[in-house]
Amino acid sequence: MKIFLDTANIEHIRHGVRLGVVTGVTTNPTIISREGKVDYQKRVKEICSIVPGPVSTEVLSQDSKGMVAEAREMARWAENIVIKIPASLEGVETTSVLAGENIKVNFTLCFTLNQAVLGAAAGAAFISPFVGRLDDIGEDGMEVVADIVEYLDYYRLPAQVIAASIRHSQHCLMAARAGAHVATVPYEVLLGMMRHPLTDSGIKRFQDDWKRMMAEEG
Ligand code: E4P
Figure (cartoon, rainbow, N blue to C red):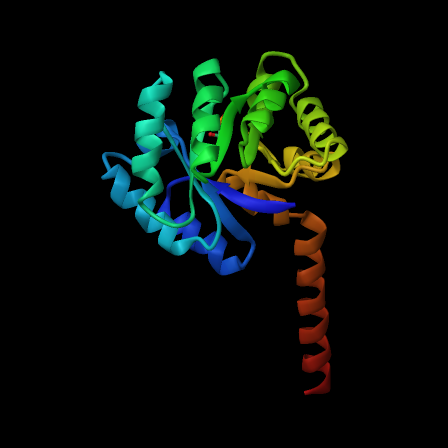
C-alpha cells in the first residue's frame, strides 16, 4: 500500500518525502485553509516540486462546465497534478470529459460502491472513499473500501483506491488488509504508524546493556 500525506504543510511533506515513504499528497480546500492565508496555486506548485508522485488538488465549482474549466487550468500547474472531482452527477460528467483529455481525476467524497462504480466507469484514476466520515455516522467506512477494491479487481479496472479520511493508525492497517492501493494519512497518523512501546523499550534495553558491558570492560 502506498502512503500519501493528507496535508498542505510543507515541513511535514518534506519530512515524509525524506523518510522515503511518502509518494503523493492529497489536499482539499479545508486542508489548504489550515495553512492560513496562502497563495493556493503557489503552494500546490511547491508541493508538486517536492513530492515524486501524484498531488491532488480540488475544484470548487459545482457544475460540470465550471469544474472542467478549473481542472484544465490546474492541470497546467505541474506534471504530477491530479484533480479532485466530487462524486456527484456533475462530477461524473466532468470526470468523463477530463479522462478523455488524459487529465487524471481523483473521484473524491465517495461514500458508496455505487458512486465508485460510476467514477471508475467515467475513467477516474483514483477513487477516494472517506472512511472516517462514514464511521462518524455509524457506518463501516472500511467495508466500503474493501468492496470497491474487490469490485475493481474483479473487473480488472485500472482505478486505484485511496483510503481517505483516515483518523488513526488502526485505519491504516485496516486499509492495508482491505487491499487499498493507497492510504492518504494526516502527518500525525504517519508518525503514529511507527510508534510502539516495545520498540522504544527494546532500543533502550540494547543501549543500557551495551553501556553496562562497556563500563564493566573498562
Ligand atoms: C482526502 O482526500 C480527503 O480530503 C481527506 O482525507 C478528508 O479527511 P477528513 O474527513 O478528516 O476531513
